[in-house]
Length: 462
Ligand code: 4AD
Ligand code: MG
Image (cartoon, rainbow, N blue to C red; front, side, top):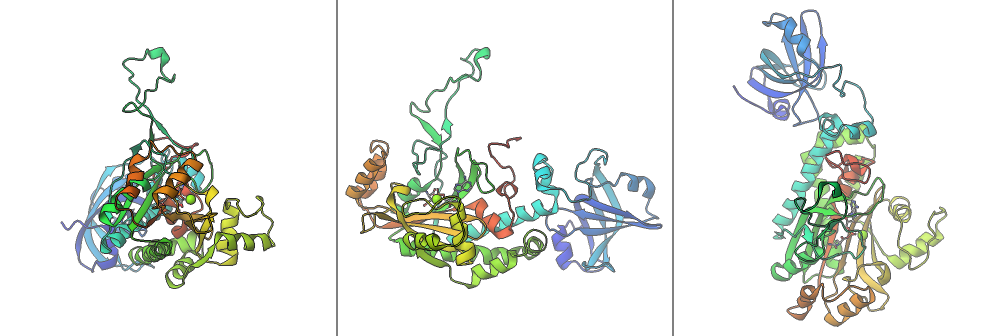
C-alpha cells in the first residue's frame, strides 16, 4: 500500500490512487448511510476527509470508537471531493484504530481553546491547528537560516553551552554546579552543596558570541544556532529563560556590512517561509493577526529604516505619545520606545545604531566621538528588539580600557584578548532571537506559544 503524508495527498493525489494514511482524528460527522471523519497527520493545517461507507464490516462498532484524538490507519481509494476547499477525499476500504481517546477526559474537543489553557496541556497542544502551524513555520525558519548561511559559505560552528564567561556582562546567568548526591545526606537535599565545575565557576551560556569570534578569526564567516539561557526574572510576552539564538560573526566586516547582512538575512527568511508554508501563513493572517501577510510583504519589498540612537532620542523627545519611562540621551530604549519607532514613526523594521557606550557591552567598538559604540539593534513593529549586534573592538588597548571601565577581569578573557594580539581584524556580528522572529512572522502575541516547551519562571512542567 502506498503510504503517504496528508499534505502530499491533498496537493498531488489523483482520483483512484490507492493510498494509506496514518494520523489522528479531528472530527466525525455521522449521516444515515455513511460518515465523514477528518484526519490530521501534522504535515499540514488541512485535514484529509475520510468517507466510511455504512456497508463496511464492523461499521457501527468502529464508528463508536472513532472519537476526537484517536489514532487511525486508513487505506482506500481517492475520489474527487464534492466538499468545499478540498480536491480529493479518501473512500475507506480498511480502517484500523490504534489508540482510542476517551471523550469524557480528552481535553481537546472540537471548540476554540485559549492559549492560556493550552499552555497547561503542553503535551497535547501540538495537536491543535495554531500550535501545529507555529511548529511548521518554526521549522521552515530554521531551515531558511541554515540555507541562507550555507549558500553564502558561512561555517556553522558549535559553541559551548557550559561556559565560564558572561558575554553580555548583564549578570543574568544560570549557575552550573556539580552536586554529588551520594555524598550528601538525604535530609540535606535542597541545601546548597554546590561545588564549582572543573574547579571554576561555570554557567549556562547567554550567548555564543565570544567563541564565535574565535572561529570567525580562522574561518572568516561563521554562525552559531543553538540554545541560550538568561536567568532574568522578567515575566513578559517576549522573554524566555531558555531561547534559541542565531549568531553570525564576520571577519573583515564593519557595522555597515553587519547592517547589510542582517537586512538581507531577514528578507530571505520571510521569503523562504512564505514559499514553504503558504497555507500556514494564510491561517495566521486570517485567525491570529490580520497584518501578518502585509508585514511579510513590506519586509521583503522595502528597505528597513535606519537611524542613529541620537536621532532616535530626538524623535522620542518630540513624540506626542506619553511614555512610562522618560527619554533622555544616555538612557536605554525601553520596549515602548522601540515599538513607537518601528510601529508609529517608520512602520517597518528599524535599525538603530551607535548607542552610548555605557549602556552596551564591553566588546562593542568605540566610535571616534569616544561616547558611543558601533552597536546595532533591529526593532520590529509589535515586538521591539529582534536583533542585537555590533562591530567588535579589535584594538587591544581600547578593549582592555573598556574592560577595566566595565569591571570585566582580563584574567578571565586572556584568550579573547589574544585574538587582538595575533592577526586582529575588524569584525562584526549580530544575534537574532529565534523565537522573536517566529513571533514576528506569525503574529503570535506570546513568546510561550512559539516554542514547544517554554521555560519561564512560571512554567516548567517538563
Ligand atoms: O541583544 P542580545 O543580548 O545580544 C547578544 O547576546 C549578542 N552577544 C549578540 C551578538 O552580537 N552576537 O541578544 C540578542 C537577541 C535579542 O535581540 C533578542 O531578540 C533575543 O536575542 N533575546 C531574547 N529572546 C527571548 N528571550 C530572552 N530572554 C531574550 N534575550 C535576548
Ligand atoms: Mg540587546
